[in-house]
Image (cartoon, rainbow, N blue to C red; front, top):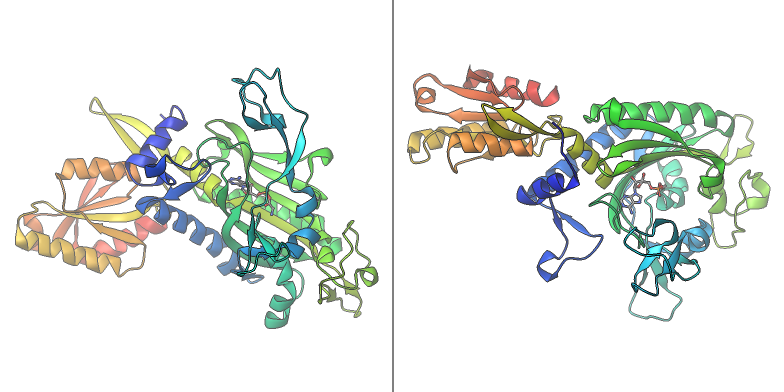
Length: 447
Ligand code: GAP
């Protein structure tokens, strides 16, 4: 049985140290969450899996980790200063402020102001002088400084189309209305790829990226039944998009966007380029008098062209919510409830827990510590030495956080160098020799 509602997941996240409300001891801050000891492992594992699939397993993508503080000129040219806003209304009777299209049912909607545009970017000042001119924004998407680094990456790697630049990291949006735990928050992480193609090949690449991204989410344990594609209608497209396909997921609160794959045309490189008039840019871009770089490439005949961009843009936090939701099961085992997170082993925060049967027996404890140290060296992720409570309780706790294997060191281990390995999903225990343990764990985590 999956989770009945989001509250069950939120409770598990807090109880076991996945996700906490930010600044909770001061009453919390709306729209901000902190990832705890297990949350940070899960998040890192998800991001590594994305990086592996988008960068390492391909030969046409480079990585980038650019600054978060972004010069206002960049976000002026990108269109964010003018268009990255939501319509906002005030309710004069309840005194609250809402996104105009998301006024909740508890508001009587009798005394609402006319909608006005509210820009979602967070502004800050760079340097000690606050003269009103040196302000910057916290980036609202990781994409923009991929575009502003386009020439640096091309010059330093000799890339030409088709090729991509990938970046993962924080993005900030001062959302008017928050939603459903970590689904819509004000500080979140994105995993974005800007894939540059020849303008004639844009549709082919768009289709191919939609297919690979859907497959990747399935490889992270998301059931196909919970995914749907949404071909965004023309009147809902972002200002830069020729076509967007959203990968939608059946979140506990409803079907919503998990990742968007947009055909951004030559809007971005065109917007940030000098000498725009020479470049035959297809998109409608803002005149640029500030850029010192021509963001274009030459084709076989030495003609300049501005590459089109296919952008798969995924939210890390929404990914975590979807993965937790899909992995959460409540089972009945011998008349008792067992909560188990059936996470794909490569995502599990703890890969294996090693536990001595007797926490006071020096020899058993020493062997268990050695087993932990040896397994840790395999580089599979976190292996935990678990020397608290009884074995049965430890098993249940590790089921709840998705640990694929629990390894118990007992008296027999001292005699014949064997341990028991208990599988999270089948709950079966197998006695194996210490010599075989590394291979067994490696197989489990890679499966
Ligand atoms: N560069 C394109 C871009 O940023 P987007 O659809 O606005 O497109 C991409 O965002 C993804 O980022 C979304 O599919 C979602 O997963 C995530 N995302 C956007 N806003 C978010 C928010 N306020 N909280 C959590 N995740 C968010």
